[in-house]
Length: 182
Image (cartoon, rainbow, N blue to C red; front, side):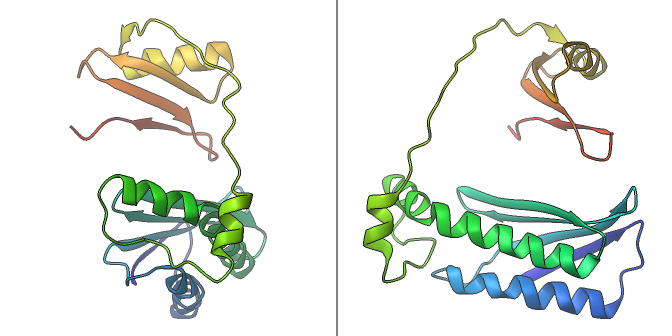
């Protein structure tokens, strides 16, 4: 695994960096082949809480987890545990989706209990569907609309790019924008 570890509002020490690499390196045992993509890790301090964000982009799948604690080492442990739970919970479904898309190999290594996991696999239950017209607007207006309705995200047609975008409120109180790559 290749790591891209950065600190935000924190002094990134060699010990902290080594600890994060060692703990996140444990995830390699869940993959059939070594990861070729970079693992992005951001260690930050937000409002006195030690926060760790990990993003692992893979072909056809993205793993992401974020955890906060008063201790940075505990945050790293918690985020690794969260990623392991995500992988164990969804590996059967992810492998099946990749095979359906024409993938030759499984992404995740299957253990001896894989057959049992297949039987116990939970279905995602869609409980509500909403339809609405996408009014063209700029990002600032979309943030204003989101805040007015009290949601933490808002889907809109970006008047500058004519594409569907999403604005969302981040945990640090700032805003993010999700837009398609093409």
